[in-house]
Length: 210
Image 1: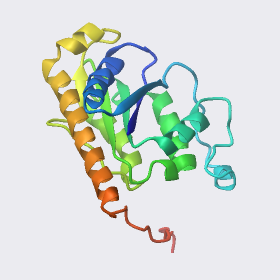
Image 2 (image 1 turned 90 degrees about the horizontal axis):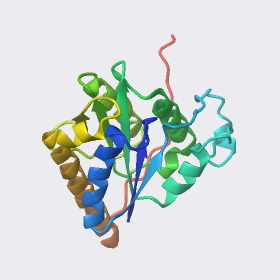
Image 3 (image 1 turned 180 degrees about the vertical axis):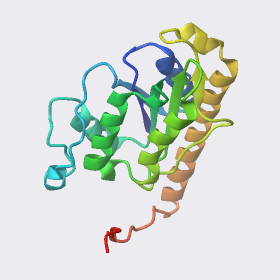
Image 4 (image 1 turned 30 degrees about the horizontal axis):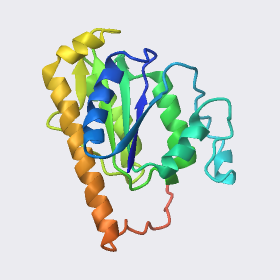
């Protein structure tokens, strides 16, 4: 089993990375392979809603960043953790652009697989940021993995040592890792017993124009 963790911070080894690494260490202790992918360093195009991905077998029409590469990785992965710093009470713009295209073009690679959101802030805006990230999971039939509190850590920007001093926050990340490992093993046991994910009905599209 493998979990992909995404770092939406432009600081490759800052507070968000520190939180993700704490969760990853627990997953690895449970025998689950992890890979932390740096998202927030380079520019990421927005989704423009062109719909061309529907004709490209789940690949985005833009090929100048890591989105298509990650969709391929996601097909082989079993779970996901998306991490972001908090900017103006919302996640990193790069992470949101990345996730919008990832889930629009590659939704099939993520459906029915567990996911979690992790955020890091100096002070506030955490719950709003968690909500923005988590909405990608709940529109795509993904089990959302929780911890013993909302999945956040606190520390000043570019201060991973402060994040490590947030002992409650570090515990939250470890509990998240344990819960992710438990759920992945439950899903695997279900598959081995012949229990597969539900068959999805064809989507019904409506609007509010009369």
